[in-house]
Amino acid sequence: MLFSKRKKAKAYPQSTHKYELPIEFRNQVVHIWAQAIGYSEAAFVSQPASYYDEELQSIQQTHHVYNLIYRDLCEEYGVLSLPESDQARGPCQALRMFIQSAQTDRALDAIELSFRKMPLLQQILHSAGLVRTSIDAQEAIEKLNARFKEHAIGFRFEQGRIIRIDSEFLQAEAVEPALRLMQHEAFEGALEEFMLAHKHYRQGQNHYDDCLTNCGKSLESTLKTICD
Image (tube, rainbow, N blue to C red; front, side, top):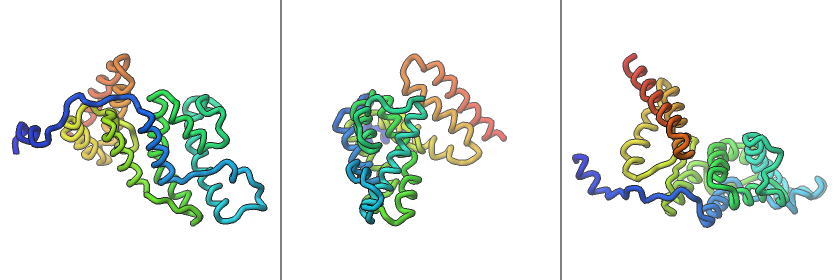
């Protein structure tokens, strides 16, 4: 089937995405966290060790996992605590408050970091045999991308990163095939430059020069690899 017929058959919308995160979407991310990581109650976490049973140990393990995400975000921002979560009683509630109130870019940071670490976090949770999650890491990613699409939000989680998309057509016909092809180890440098270009593009027009520079670098690296 030729290009024009493929385009008509798929009926991809053009420039129909928005780039802000509505509160409904943010709440849905919290629900995905709960399904894939669990939920820790601060009231349980504060109990002394003598009260611990299997359920409390499970909550402690979940608390530990949320704390890993929280600490990584604080380190990235160079702060000791996230200002959006000053009143939180623990890392689980802190991250929930953060994603509900943070600016879009920071909320996307929390989403990217948590879903990038999801396989490792689930491994930590399951290693002790105390925590049973209802969905695995891949299912969590699929649910996240489905929610992005449901709300017509122009972002998608691919290969451990949040990338911006401007149309379903461009995403399906250009971005995703390029990402798949560049998973080969020979294209590792080109992929890094490609994703850096996406990062600058997402940051807005003040970063378009950097975006184009890294696009050029990625193209050059790809051509060098193919020619070699």
